[in-house]
Image 1 (cartoon, rainbow, N blue to C red):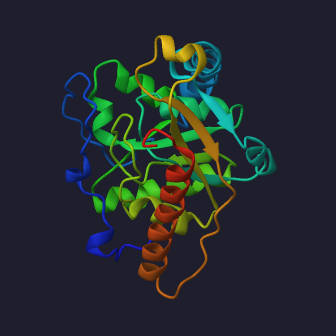
Image 2 (cartoon, one colour):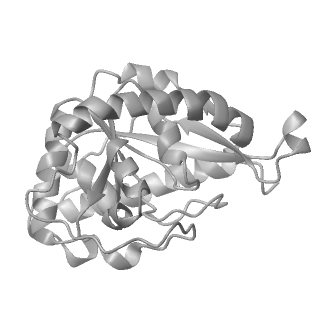
Length: 258
């Protein structure tokens, strides 16, 4: 990864703008040599088991019943199953990362997350075992992080990034994208699979007990990041272009405002 990043293209702690709050996290410090993508033996043993159990409980029990969860265009994922990809989506539910992971399963999946999540009691460790990869804020650590990210992709994994950065449950629009999400894809030189969580009004039996919108995951065709001149221009263009694509799709397929 280039070490001469533009100052506008760095990851800052003040991007933590979550409106969903959990137990207060304890302070966390990442050290050099940190295992961001869980290559130690205990991750290899326990992560597949936990993800499988999560798929049964979340994908087939909790999500359909309580969220009205459905997936559209899943066949697109099958076309790229043997290739490494970065995928992005809006961040509007505490379980949306788990939902995507169960849809992509059995493919190896990682999710980039705020490093401060590691400090959440109990939950922080679960996030790590379920594929959470904390993003460091120090420039020297970012170089090491990108190297491990590239290695994970070289092994055929899929890596998820939330360009909005923060979690805002049931947000009714696509928020501005941070450039870091696209920068990771540019530096790793892989295609992007855009996904959109769409909000729908409750229908049928859901209207009897659902006050919040139903949640659907729509998979879009692969997005190729081509060169637009300089590195900065490339990242800037594709960040805005992907934001426009997801925004238009969300507005077209969500009916909560109609």
